[in-house]
Figure 1 (spheres, rainbow, N blue to C red):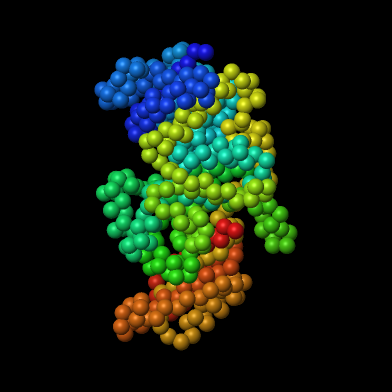
Figure 2: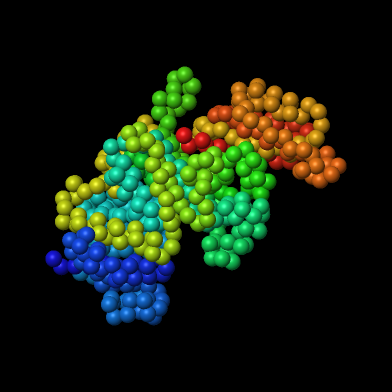
Length: 453
């Protein structure tokens, strides 16, 4: 059978990895796909550099649209990134009847509904395993391996930069700003790390996973996003003393039947934020730039997916897996292919009515609170009294000696409180009341806590 012809848009870090792995494992891949997979064209603005990567094995052009216009190209691989030209090129490739493989989580999280609809109408596939967690096959696991399950929740460390920073803060007792500079020096963080450290990158990925897990459209605009920039070394140290570690988690949780009894609405929680996780959980022990995703299904129970979430060849591994899938299924009836978001497309909008993405004020979780307070009698009683009045029950209290916090003779101390589950809106009101106390001397630190049972 004639090899399937691939056009590569962008041959940077990931594109080079795709080319190199395809060349190195060509025979293995052919045996699995049932036909050869060849990169026939490469488009890159730096055509000279692209030529040094591919040599004479592929045609190199400076215009991506030349690849899309070539009738011999079967699959277009988009590795440009971003929302702008990448979206236009993907839609043009679909309109031209090309299958598309992309690693572009931002594009799919924001414009996925439009892109998948266009692909379905044209009868072509859009594959995106590399868009979430690099080389970890989490998309295939959610979409196919766990298809018998009613997925209950997902919690993932899905940004290696922030996990590296948090690991270093814990190991070395350093504050965020210091570790960020070191991460940039070592190449773990970009010169402009905003998307990573503010949680946006993780939210893109969590949005895609939530759609596949729960059968809803991608809705990035409804995700709650909070990064790690306000975390201090003290919080990481206190969490450790309480038996927890702090991780930036992307969380998607189905909440149904919560009840008439509780008065809480049904829906999906979609959120990214620093989270206290019990140190005994496997995911709490994922260190450095590694990624991990925990999925809870009703039939299978808890499953964990761990590996490299970025890098040239780990991401290339996922891109090539998508190419193999398309090579196997290209001639299949489009109606019999695995749907882009796991569920039949006509059911996605129906699910929005029964499973809306809940506002953060309706999220239910437990909390870590750190209050810098005056070291005097009655402070703890006032704080716990306000929590009790709000109906928030306390799981644990840790009060530091004033000398530990501010040095000898200090008149301030840290009060750390762990709560049981409560509604976020209720906690917001309680924090506002505690903050107004004259004995609370600085902004209250609030970090959400997940037991991940």
